[in-house]
Length: 80
Image 1 (cartoon, one colour):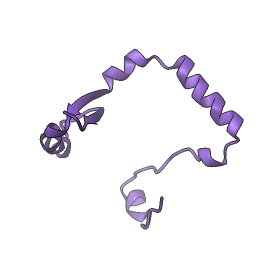
Image 2 (image 1 turned 60 degrees about the vertical axis):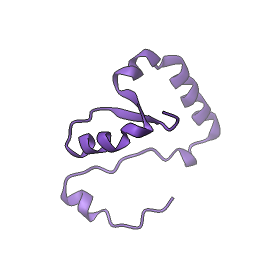
Image 3 (image 1 turned 180 degrees about the vertical axis):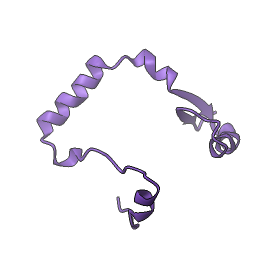
């Protein structure tokens, strides 16, 4: 996936562009990382950072998002 842009606007605003390059990580280490997530991640805590909305709620949620009233993640159920 390309990102045809400059990083200058991010740097000027003090935004850190960070991430993990898992593509270059050996397969065995990636498998171990996924196994650790499966074993160590408390799935009950995910409900504290995400909630599900229906497709019909996307426009209203987008307005809330732009107004800074949304925290966490929104999962869109396209069948609702």
